[in-house]
Amino acid sequence: MLSTIIFTSIGIIIGAAAVYFYFKIEGSLYLKKIEEANERKISQAQKRLVEIEQKAAVAETKLKEKILDAKNRALEIVEEAKKEEQAMRRQLEKQEERLISKEDLLEKKTSEVEKNKLDYEKRVENLKIEEDKLEAIYKEQEDKLASITKLTKEEARQMLLNNMEREYKDELVSHYKKMNEDIKENSQKEATNVLSQAIQKLASDVTSESTQTIVELPNDDIKGRVIGKEGRNINAFEHLTGVDVIVDDTPNAIMISGFDLVRRYVAKRALEKLVEDGRIHPARIETVVEETKEQVHQMMKEFGEKAAFEMGITGLHPDLIKIIGRLRFRTSYGQNVLKHSMEVGFLSAHLAASIGADPQVAKIAGFLHDIGKAVDHEIEGSHALIGADILRKYSMPDAIVHAVEAHHEEITLNTAEDFVIMAADAISAARPGARSETVETYIKRLRDLENLTTSFDGVEKAYAIQAGREVRVFVKPDKIDDMAAIKLSHEIARKIEKELAYPGTIKVQVIRETRAIDMAK
Image 1 (spheres, rainbow, N blue to C red):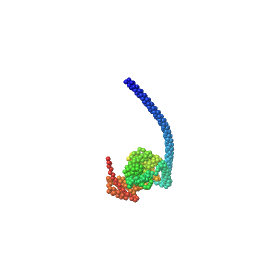
Image 2: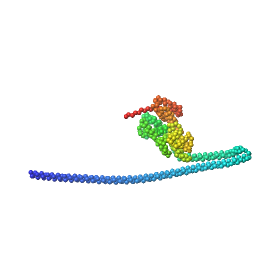
Image 3: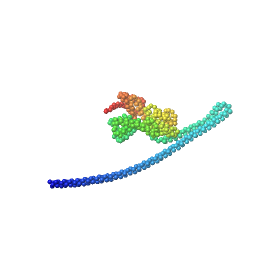
């Protein structure tokens, strides 16, 4: 029993020792693993720190480079600003020199006018002296005749007058004629100098407009898509725009023909959009044409604002600005009316300054003198009178309104500005190459054809196409039925035969279209 206890105790002691050594060894290994893990973390942290320091160094270098670049750019901007300032200074100096030169020229002309005035006054004074001498001689002879012939005073006076008339008639007539010729010659020279100076200050381009516009295409394959199956696309396009679309052998181009500048411009922009978009079919064509028309109406205001800005004219009513922009799409004998109006405005200002009239009134009146042409196809009457009514509506000064109203002598010319506007208008119109009688006659014939057609009841709009050989008439379907459309085409054709002169034949095509639209929800 005792031995058993002893062996058991020894076993327990040995087991405890074994457990102790086991945990001691395991603990040492665990601590070693922890130390190794810590060393790895420390090593990784050191590497990370080195990388961060390297990145920080690179970032600092880049920052310094950017700062240096910014400083260099700032120096360049300063240098450019200095150069621009120097250029502007030089330009201002040149302008100042030109102004001084013009002032000298104006002073010279003023002195010449004063000199001519003094010469004239001197001649008048000499004539007065001669008249006094003649009066003295007349009185002396009258007294002598009265004493010698015993004539009555009235008889002696009549005899003296007859003698003097015979003696001095030729001399007085010759002297008077010479004075008139000298005055006319000096006036002619002065007027020629003033007009020459005004014309030389204005260098404008020839503004003649044609009746055709070319639209460039990326390739000839587009032509087939523009025409469409059985011509549906091109027919829809012509129907909506009122122009002729000419597709021929010209490479990478389609020609748009029409006398109305607005229609041609709308057609050109719409066709360019369709070609760029690639979707060309009747529904898309209708959408694009309507959008383009809205854009062109907005552009009219922009054209008016740009023209007024270039003229240096401010304070015009916004609606008047829009009417001015419409002149961009009007021509007179092939001359663009907006460019012609600007030209007349500049010329009027120069002429007015040269003769002592109001340059600002002349400039504005010259710029607005053809404003009536923007609406003369909508309102009956002379464009000068229509323009004056428009300017009165927008409360323009009376001097400007009267100058516009009188520039074709439909009312009396009262002021110097009135004569200046009329002269500037004539100069601009008479400039070689400015106008073309043939183009204007052609456009007038087509416009008369359209106006005659739209005079019938139930007609919504009409387009003259094919150089006037065809007129397409669009009627209101609620007022004109199919039978009435046939009758209307005959009536229009008969009226054209009676009232218009035209070569060849004119095809009258009445188009009645009804649309029913509903929404599926």
